[in-house]
Length: 121
Image (cartoon, rainbow, N blue to C red; front, side, top):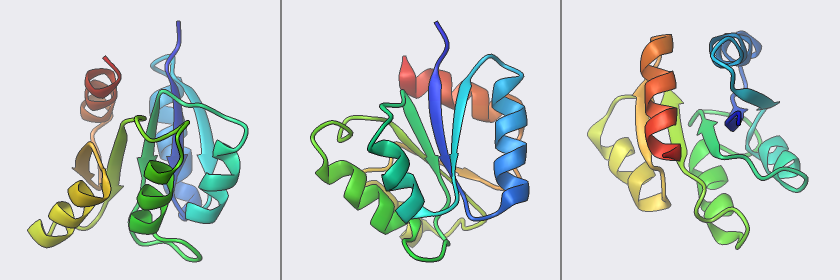
């Protein structure tokens, strides 16, 4: 059984890198360009895990996490934040919003895969 992941990032290059890294490991990858688009994708998808950036137009990662946690059907999905940010304040804010983990870009494929497998169980 493959693990379904929604990756939300405004950078096409980063979406492509995540898609390549996870697809090659057997993950089913769905992509969204920002938080608003991510919520639209979630209307028709129940992924096993979500990866989101923080700094995005229209709806940033914090707003996206908050919105995901408010929906009954998505409130328990593990969310990994994948961002260039590394400040303890932002990490704490993400945890308070409901993020499961935090990975700093650039990411190592094996670490991302391992983190996803760990949070999905």
